[in-house]
Image (cartoon, rainbow over all chains, first blue to last red):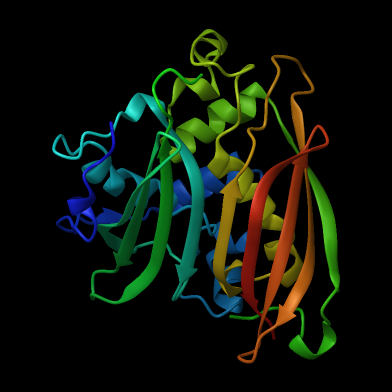
Length: 150
Length: 142
């Protein structure tokens, strides 16, 4: 079933702050096998000009995707999540996410399309820190495959 | 931001050192825990096959995290990445054996932009098949 076009432009309320932990960054960096010291050694991060350890570039997706759950699970939108695959992902950074950040995400539906029976949903997540400064924007394209297609 | 590569030293066509990343079922379980993405298609073969996949597949975001390492290892400072985007064109299928799968990533400077940044175009393949498309990063150089 085609999704309702009137959802384009809808913005959801900002999420509760997510506090970025030093050990969570380490856990993520280890899971992707990335030994860059900027992720685990505060002195190494400072030598690069960062106030504390920073997170790998894609770390913030865990936060923005959770926020996108508001959209994906919106019963009014009616997306069939069991058929959803991740189409595209893009980030634009004002600065890297770092330990101690308290981040909120504001999700907006940028586009709703129907292509060959697939529902295509573009969600933008604007990530701000506790001071209200913009940190990163994440664009996520989700595709709900047409029913009947494997 | 302190990139160890100088803007003046790169040209369009400059190749970044290519890298190979191995991914086994254990890698996927570890990534699931670290990222909070517990979708069973990334660890449960029975479930993956029931939804029409050939086998367990890697998280697209795992592949995306590996591909950018070609850029962050090149510049040294991961904070130098200003933009990064990919299209997930084909899944990385991860068999249940000791070898798993290998993701091969290469990168090349595609454009020098006016503000001290360059655009790097990345290629990512697994088993000879392209797994990411439109994979591009903009990175600030020293």
